[in-house]
Length: 260
Ligand SMILES: O=C(O)CCC(=O)C(=O)O
View 1 (cartoon, helix red, strand yellow):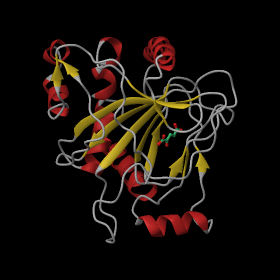
View 2 (cartoon, protein in one colour):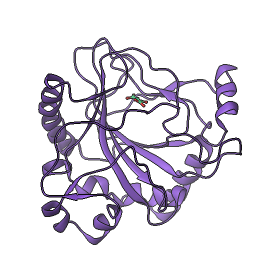
View 3 (cartoon, helix red, strand yellow):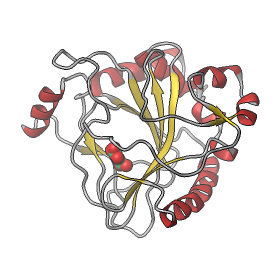
View 4 (cartoon, helix red, strand yellow):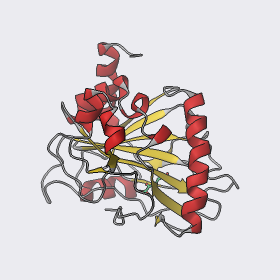
């Protein structure tokens, strides 16, 4: 663990206020370089097979197979990330998503959106129930499609958030990131993907953590039994609602509706 309890508290407080925090240089670049190499193969395969979920022109959502180097506890069970996730989304969260968003050259601005609807329509927004932990597999600059987000719209209802954005009170801000940086965000904050104007894909991994009782039918992780049996108790607990399968499943995306 890199941070103290007090530092986790401070990150959680910043998250409550802003709807996101970035842990600078948190994951080892050597691990991420290996992920990038494996991901480049997967991307090429999926593009060839038309087996991505398309999130705009030249923008692809791809679930990672939960096997080999992608089934990495040092990433999805990171103690600092989980300490912050638990402070903002409650104890005993569940892991429901391990995927990537990749804009390529020719990608465009997405419409500004939230990734999930409110729990209760027409009522004030609740505490956090769905978090995304994002980390890029390259440096993210203003040229290769930085994630843009508003700050502090995660606790506004959809209408208030939209007005705050449209009036300029809560403008979009680009989030440039270095390889190794990790962003934890509430998926209700208004945000969008931006164009990648380079020839190199910009993969951003997304790990989804849900409040202990929250179920997102649109995403899941197929966990091969052999991989599951080698995991730590903490990792098994995080994956308790995920289906176990004989082999890692390749291809076919079911997470199609993503913008609210
Ligand atoms: O990849 C990004 O920068 C953002 C993508 C996004 O917000 C989405 O597809 O929902």
